[in-house]
Image 1 (tube, rainbow, N blue to C red):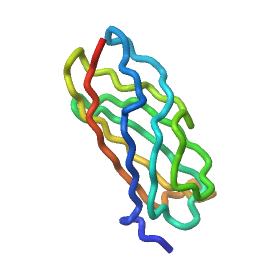
Image 2 (cartoon, helix red, strand yellow):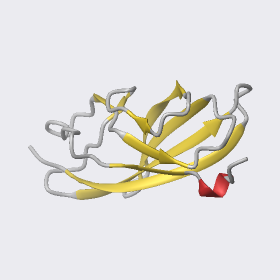
Image 3 (tube, rainbow, N blue to C red):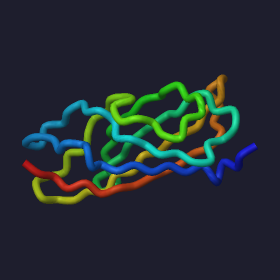
Image 4 (cartoon, one colour):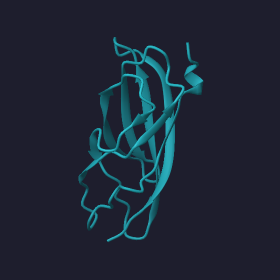
Length: 117
């Protein structure tokens, strides 16, 4: 069985558009790269927080069948929306869940995002 501590994820915001005029909007998820996902994982639960201001952006639980890449636009969430020219740090928490929704492991990944017009 894979160690839960080894579960890792990465992403970037390169294809994510900034919000317009500070108005939050629902946006497609970025692409995620996963490694060492725990054996027995049936679903992944994604949740985003702007750790600069402590704002919860939500996320989604999706079925998982062993793929190392979760494609962009696999789910929707409230996209990043820092003030114009400000940079905030965002953190995705990804929980690996078994078929009974018990947690098998957790991965976290951070990236900065700068607000624009």
